[in-house]
Image (cartoon, rainbow, N blue to C red):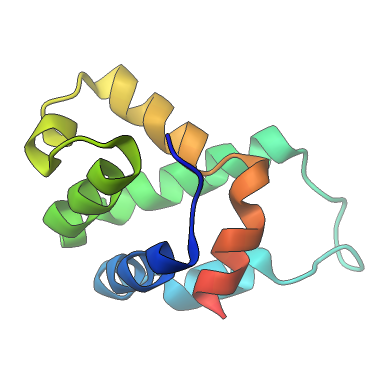
Length: 107
């Protein structure tokens, strides 16, 4: 997967709006260290993956196109990935190194 760039913010925001997740993700990234014990990065990534998986049918084609752009593949190739490979791709997307991108995209 290529590194996330500024040009990816627009397409990703479009996906979030269609998934009706923008407000949920704003809350997700809000600093909660005062209220709760901070989650481990792996827990955060898993939570994000499941949040997207539960809602991606609302923007399936746009989400496949977004991932395809990151992978240098077509949207159809992403759609035809085995489920485990698709989940691994999403886990990589939502890894800790990409958190600054997602915070920017939802604000």
